[in-house]
Length: 342
Image (cartoon, rainbow, N blue to C red):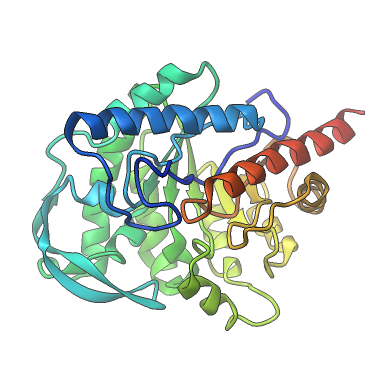
């Protein structure tokens, strides 16, 4: 990137009401067949336009073609039975009915490549594509076959690497792996989680990122955050090993969070996506609030390595709220960019 402080989003954006139920995760599609395929493409185009109008430099698809950031990938894999469901505790904080791994997992064909090609056609600028990380994938399933979280994570890492290589060939500039599980399962993350993440990114020439946050602004997550005390120091557990990893960019939550900003020092040398937009509130930030978060982050990351972003995805928000937040992100980054260039 030649742009100073290039802005981007963590991932998802709200879907249009004609495509899916607003402000709802795992919302069923309102269209079918060819109408659904066309509707997804139209929604993706709208998401790109919203980002462009807001001054977002590295655009994504807003995850408009996916019902969920994990399960849409998983449902295209062999070895997973969506009819055989079990209740599991996700991220060790809320229960959900999930599909079951019943055999060896494999990827019979590319999952997102055609969507990524379509995104590439929408802009000449840099594009980013998000994928779930291996640890977060295993935490969103019931495993009745491998019966080993680590073994299944390594299998998913291989599958993710296959998909990522084809996304790169389709013109994706940054491939981001979402690993909110890193903020919960610290021992596993350090023992083998970061290693499986590196395997998922192995051999890529595109830049790689890992997104670690405190989750969507849903009640289970906001209730959990209330139990974390006056300082959220979860990043302290994994950042030292991430700093030594082959991953290029680390994405973290900062806006309206209790994460001590100086924890960014632990990943000195990495590029950092600084979450400067709170996704757990409908209140739209003022550009100056965004700028203030970025100024604080600049104490611990060099300007040429700082990417202003959102704390997490914005799928559960109203579209007008998300659009306002995107504009605040673009405007806030512009304020600090002007200060640095003065």
